[in-house]
Image 1 (cartoon, rainbow, N blue to C red):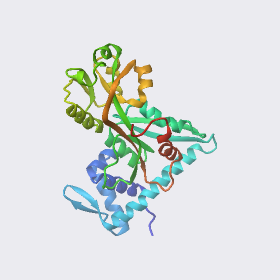
Image 2: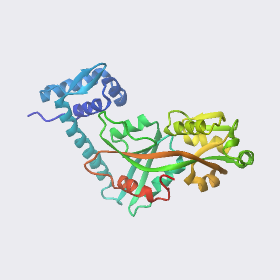
Image 3: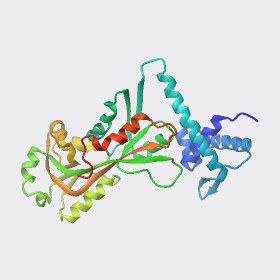
Image 4: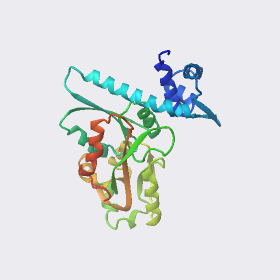
Length: 302
């Protein structure tokens, strides 16, 4: 039997995850024709069609689902092999490649990941920030070990990942001292017309905030909407407007952003998830993160 061409298999694996040759070609940086040719060679070698057309996309055939299961294991073990060889013969440094969704408060990400850096093992964090879909795609390609985000991975699809809830964090409104003197007394009924900074509607938290504003019959003046939580808090620190943040971070926000809590947004909370690959060999730092987060000084469900 002719040995399997792992380059062909890798192209198949990416197409299976993306559900489209076009998207797979964009992710791999090659032409669609190259993808198509490699897949044809693999199907010819295996003697089975691996995909069926469905609308403008592709779905795995029965043989394709079997092949994907083996490809998942092959490339997961390949990633583990690479990491093991890189650290062999040197200090036993454990690398954790973490993706941080741009909507996650950075102080909260630090608090969560501090449970990893405090492990007995020598840990090196490699952090990336980006949009949810981009980070999830990088996780599927094993460029990341874990993604911290405000929503679980979508159900269904070809991605084999776990979504582990790390906690639910009560939200409060914060402001600089100058704004607090105007809006702290009589909170929240005095917030009509108050300048407010909010996450964009792409973020899960925004829907909860909008419902709170509607239920409390408050109509603030929204002076800024931000995709990136760090940018939102930067504008908040400069006094442009009142801004939401986890109540559990009040001390750090006071120290680093020179802002004080006006009051809690009752019923508004932010759920944080760790999304990781379905691996035969689980990353010990990911396991530590998922196990320790509820005890890391962040009270779930406040």
